[in-house]
Length: 243
Ligand code: IPE
Ligand code: IPE
Ligand code: MG
View 1 (cartoon, rainbow, N blue to C red):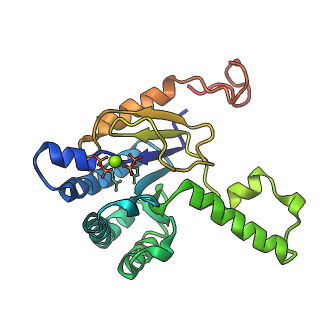
View 2: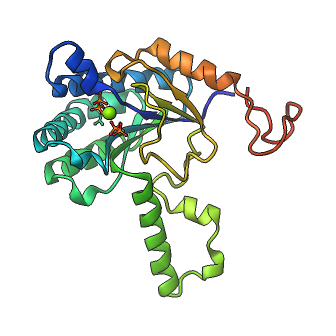
C-alpha cells in the first residue's frame, strides 16, 4: 500500500546555494518552489497527507538575516500560491507555534488556510516554527488544563488521547519520512507521530529533489516489511505486511 502520509525534512538548501556560489537564501527560494511541485506530485500519486518541515523551533539559532529572509519567502509563498493550491485540490494547514511568528506571516498563513479550506485531494501541513517536543508539550499542557478543570480524568490519558491533541490530530501518522541532504537524523520532527515511520535519507539536496526522487522514496517504502514489533506475518494479517 502507498504511504498515507509522507513527512519531508527539506534539508540542504544552504549547501545547494553555496555549491553554486549563491547566497543561502537563493537556495531557500528554489526550495520553496520545489515544495510546491512535490506536493502536486504527491497529490497525483494518491498520497493523502504531506507534512513539510519548513522552519524548526531550533532554526531561530541562525543569523537574523537568514531567519528574516526565510520569513519573507514564506510570506510570499503563501500569498502567491494560495489560489493555485486551492484550485489544485491542496488544503493547507500550518502547524507549529504561531505565537512567535511575525504578524504578517500569521495573516497570510491564515488566509491560505481559509482559501484552501474546501480543497480535498491532499492535505499539506506546513510545519512552521514546529518542533516535535513543542507539539507534545502543547498537547500535554491542554490535557492538564482539562484535568485541572475537571473535564478529563487523569486515567483518561492514553496514547490516542495524546495523538488527538497534537497538531496532526485526526490525521494518520506519517508512514514515510523523507530527509534530503544526507543527514540521518530526525531534528525534532514529529517525534510522537514518527514512532513507526520508515525513514528514507537521500544525499540529494532539497532544491534538486524531483518527482523521480519522490518515486524512489515511495518505492523504498513499498519494499519495506513493516513488523510493528511483531514478526513477519502472512499478507492480510493485521498490520504485519507493508508492501
Ligand atoms: C533546510 O535547508 C531549510 C531550513 C532549515 C529552513 P538548510 O538551510 O538547513 O540547508 P543546509 O542544511 O544548510 O544545506
Ligand atoms: C531540519 O533541518 C529543519 C528543517 C528542514 C526545517 P536543519 O538543517 O535545521 O537540521 P540540523 O540542524 O541539520 O539538524
Ligand atoms: Mg540543514
